[in-house]
Image (tube, rainbow, N blue to C red; front, side, top):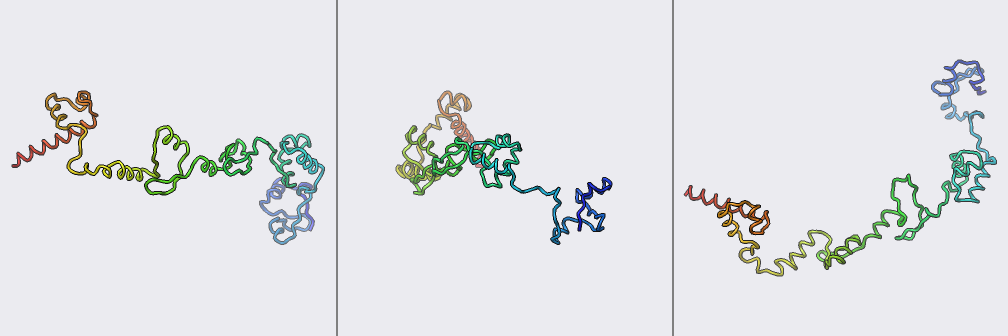
Length: 260
């Protein structure tokens, strides 16, 4: 079967468009058969036209580009393309075919990880992932900045950032460390709270402020929580709670007397 190029035939624009776009099969003017590429590919009779196929023979540019890359690994694709006279995309295709590195060698981008000692290449600026000149991955950065400690309450190992340990234990003088807030509360309750001073559990809890005196001053002066806090030097929130409790107690007494 002879394949005829529609460009050499005296056909209309629609027939040419049908052939090049492959929307409908094109009928050969010699054998009157429909040239449908997909059907011919399945039957094994398809042979690409020489004018449509790209020549894959290795020419002079192939060896020139390969020799330039081997001689100068730091050369960029654009500089190699300017020397040979092709585009940088064509240079990249040839280098990938020759199994040569497509990226230029940059000593500043070839680094050693400070955590695992692995050699890695620094990503370019358009890379949106992890980029660091000290660590090859996020895991290495995390392992380098965190150490394992033992909780004083549950005795489990947990990671903690080194900078926080220096701040709390070095600058603030903290001598104990816990994995969670719950462990901290349990440890303080056993070593600093009622576990050390069980006598505080018996009877009423020792009050820091005299609530009766606050209520008496309120009855004498009629001041609110703000003025009483300035007068007695007691937190305004504490005075507000005391006044609310005393008012509820007085209201309850009045109701009991009226019902009784």
